[in-house]
Amino acid sequence: MRARTTKITRATTAVRHDLEHYCRDLNGWPRSWMGVEKDLPPGEQLLALFRPFLEHLVASDLSPKTIQKHVDNMWALGGEFIRDLHSDSFLRKKPVELVLRQMIEYGGPLLYHGSEDPQRSFDSTCRKFHQFLTTTAR
Image (tube, rainbow, N blue to C red; front, side, top):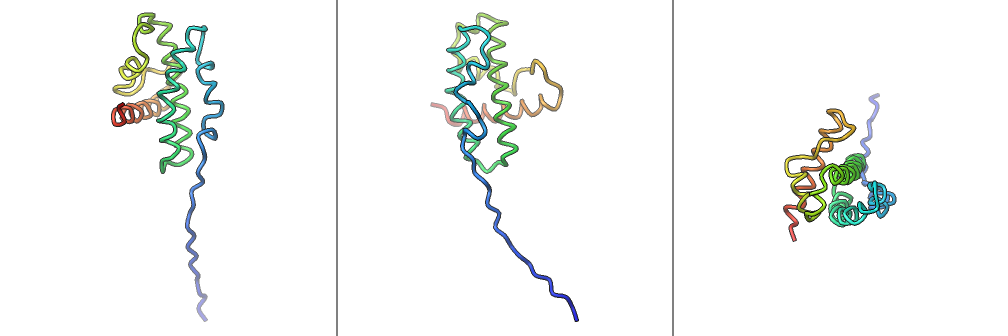
């Protein structure tokens, strides 16, 4: 007698998380980036630019692990942006969005504490963010 095999097809339901799941204390990001008090306003402007992209990521079909990687890279981008303000005070006189767009036009800035793999991931996120800003231009 032959053994019968049964196929069970299960629909995979992706668990959807909200933005807070991936970005704990999102509103606190500008304070986490700041070195001095005058870093807070540009940090808050960055967050306003980041939020629609982060919401877009969370609503996408990307895996939770990939979404988290992009979120972590976005947090790092904010830190690198503020670091650049400290190294070039002229940037403070320019609009935050303009400086940001120039910074990520061809990938991201060099990570302060980064090696090749994290830099590659970071650049990928920055390119994705730049494309998002370009296609959803106000």
